[in-house]
Image (cartoon, rainbow, N blue to C red):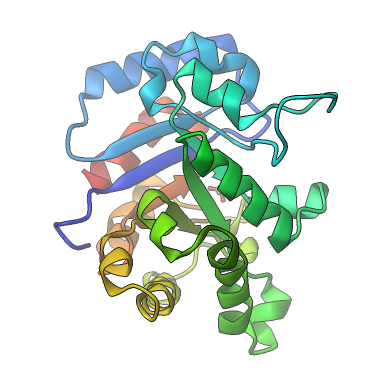
Length: 246
Ligand code: PGA
């Protein structure tokens, strides 16, 4: 990891958690006092208000639409008004469960940026795509859909998360080299349009990260931290992962 890029670790609780977990994670974070890493927690919406420092809280999705007649949706404006700073956008589970295309994801990123949120833009391939040899094309198109709408300059305010679908929740972590290869590709792809932004953007890895493998993954030159699912539900495990990036 380049020293100029501040490490970034986010916990994605998905549809898990409780008031008890909010309080346990908040206490663990306060006690750990992690200073050299952005350490963000992304709980389901109902638990957001339980955190004392909303600047280190993110949501797992925002609507691409403005406030209005869209039952069940949550707008970027509402999230921003709360004081929350981050929004995971385009997670593969949402792309699959809610048919979020690259185009929809791009509009969500655009909306989040307009409201001053930092999007954590998720990209990543299925095993089938990887084995078909189309891995890099696939990732490039996921990035390009956003670049076309927002412009490359906006990537200065984005965190990219590389999350191979085959590694999510499976215990099958990408090897540090596999992660590094794709992270380097992403940085190189962005650099073709803006070298300065590519050098400064944080690219984090997600997919079965735990305390035991975090250090090795985060020590890769283009891996700037992690997006942590299952392991973020265990406060001590999550803290150890943040410390590995710290
Ligand atoms: P996992 O999930 O750490 O449980 O594999 C990562 C993610 O989906 O963000």
